[in-house]
Amino acid sequence: MIIGTVRGDIVSTIQHPFYNGRRMLVVEKENFEGKPSGYIIAIDGGVGAGVGDRVLIVDEGTGARQIIGDPKVPLRSIIVGVIDHIETGA
Image 1 (cartoon, one colour):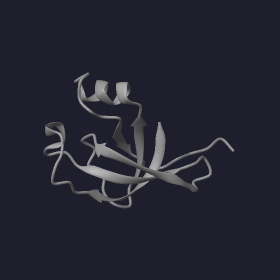
Image 2 (cartoon, one colour; image 1 turned 180 degrees about the horizontal axis):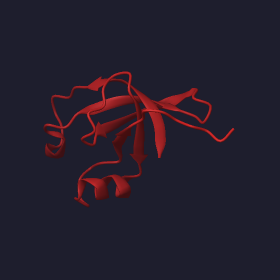
Image 3 (tube, one colour; image 1 turned 90 degrees about the horizontal axis):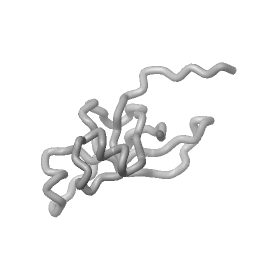
Image 4 (cartoon, one colour; image 1 turned 135 degrees about the vertical axis):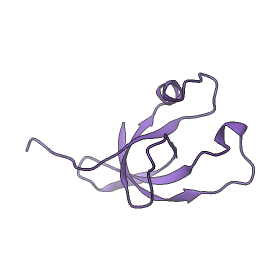
């Protein structure tokens, strides 16, 4: 799983039918210290994530497709939660 912050939406005029009606979001990934470590594009898995939200992403195709319930969709990354708070043991 990946932690990141939603930075924007992706709008595409040509897309696979699976993506019709689904939101694609640009997420800035974070390392364990909370520092940026690149970007990823993920669909909103029904959690209602928006720009500025810290989110939890499944970035593994089989796991993402299992969440959707269709083993044949062209999907790799899906947002599965909006993070309210992170606690560390340190």
